[in-house]
Amino acid sequence: MGYIQFILLLLQVHAVFCNTEKIIFLGPSEVHIPVEHPTLEDLKLETLSPQQWSLRTHIRAEFPTKSSKYGQASWYLLHGLQEGQRYEVRVCWAATQPTDFRLDAYTLQAVFNTPELVTSLAQYLEGRQPDPVELEDQEPGITKWSAKSLESTLFLQVLAAADYYTMNKTLMEHVPPVYADIILDPYFLNVFPRSLVPTAVYIVLLAIGSWYLAKCISKWFQTFAQHSNDKKKKKS
Ligand SMILES: *[C@@H]1O[C@H](CO)[C@@H](O)[C@H](O)[C@H]1NC(C)=O
Image (cartoon, rainbow, N blue to C red; front, side, top):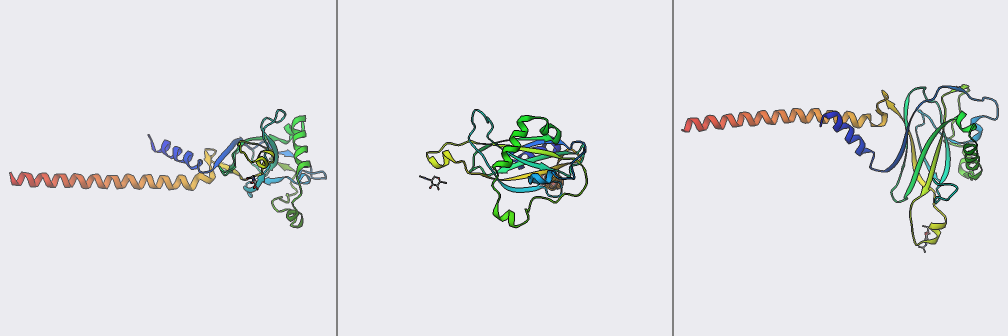
C-alpha cells in the first residue's frame, strides 16, 4: 500500500467518529438574486457560507410515512460559493439519536421550478416556530447579505427520518429534534476537504519521520550484525 492510499484510508477513518452523511457538489454559476423585497434574506433560513461554515442546530425529524419516505425536510441556504469549486456539506449527529439523513442541494431555479420542492420549502417555513431568543437577538446565524446581486447560491434540503424503536410511547409519537452540526467544507485543490488538510499534513510528516527512523534502526542493526560477525571471526 502506497503512502497516498494509506493517507486516504486514514482520512476515511477520521470521518467515522460521529455519524455523518454528506453530499459533494460544485459551486453553481452565479445568478442574479433579487435585492428588492422579497429577497432570499426574507426567507430567514439558516445559512452557511465559506465564511460561516459551521452551524450547530436542532433538525426536526419524523418517522417515515407513505407521503414522506425520507422523513421531515429542513431547508438551509448555501451562499457566497465559488463557481466550479468543489464543496462538501456534512451533517454530524450523535449515535444516541438514530436518524437517517438525506441531503440534496438545489439551485434556486430548480427549487422554484419544481412544485414539490416549493411545497416542501413552504411547509418548512410555516412549521418553524420562531425562537424567542433569536427574535430578541436580531437573528444570529442569519447573515446580513452584501448588496451584491450576483451570487453562487444553493438551497440545501435536509431530510431526517427517525430510525429507532422504543417502548416509550412519548418517544414513538414525538420524535425529538436531532442535535446536529452542519458543515460546509470546500475542497482543497478540488481533491480533499480543507478541514482535513491539517490531518493530512500531520500524517505525511509522521510517515516521513517513521521512514527515517526505520532507516536509522536498520542501519544500526546492520552495524551491530557486522560488529558481532567481526568478533566471531576474531574468536575463531
Ligand atoms: C419517555 O421519554 C421521555 C423523553 O425522553 C421521558 O421524559 C419520559 O420520562 C419517558 N417515559 C417513560 C415511561 O420512560
